[in-house]
Length: 106
Image 1 (cartoon, one colour):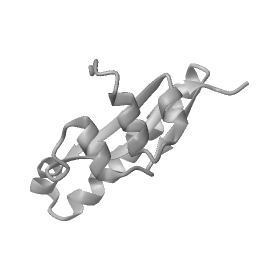
Image 2 (image 1 turned 90 degrees about the horizontal axis):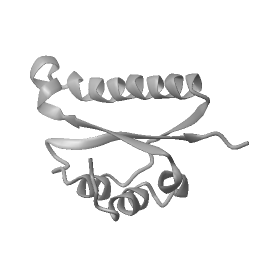
Image 3 (image 1 turned 30 degrees about the vertical axis):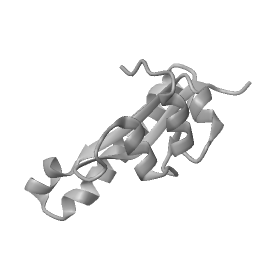
Image 4 (image 1 turned 180 degrees about the vertical axis):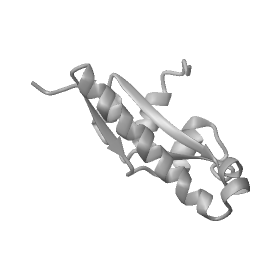
């Protein structure tokens, strides 16, 4: 758990300043470690990382609906800025997808 109050702002900026990122109740950021998929699947592992992130995010949508909340997947982010905000290297370990959860507008 990150306790740095500036992290939320850095993540929002990395997501091209989409303000709902900052306003969400929770922000989920899926990251991948390339080696974990590539050793088994070779070059196709890169594709599978992104497919898996999509499947997990779809479950976020299903869970959000079950509790009466809204979810929004975000693929529009600046890779280097988001990886830096997460303090990951961006080469071997990198962000692949973002999702936010919050109240539905009324």
